[in-house]
Length: 215
Image (cartoon, rainbow, N blue to C red):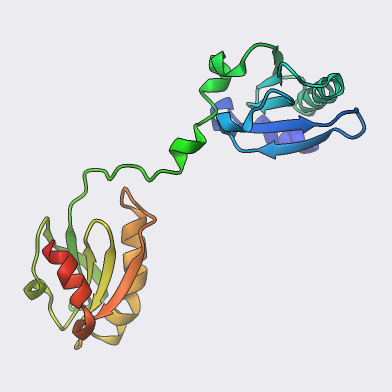
């Protein structure tokens, strides 16, 4: 039925782990909340449950409350029941971070906030043109290029590593102008840094972009 039938087709590797925290002083007032999958989410006062799909780990920390433990145990049994008894329920009473089943799932929050180091990335210039009758993108240059490489009749996407520009030529067609931004989004989403901002600049107001090109 219900929840389980959706679960039946999920391979353990595809299941997204979840971490739950149990906070309270009595069984009735113990609340269950989902917390981020970080080592920093754990403390020494509460009970946690790491739900890995087919493996459910109850983490009893040193100063946790007995009612939190009972509530967590019932929660784990309910999850197991909903999944036709297939998950394996286990309890960890030691430091959970020394347990590989926990440490390999939980990330480090402090590391996550830092931007990943830039990958092997080079500058790139791409032309957006409808010369052929339909708008399409063509790679024009990589590693280095000059403002002279930009043709006023077309729109160009200039990937300058840190930022991405859509350069709009004064004589570009309406279709080229209209499609420049969407092509740039599509291009950036496929790079190793898909979250970079994209700026649209007109040919006459592109000084900032030219300056960055020269760097």
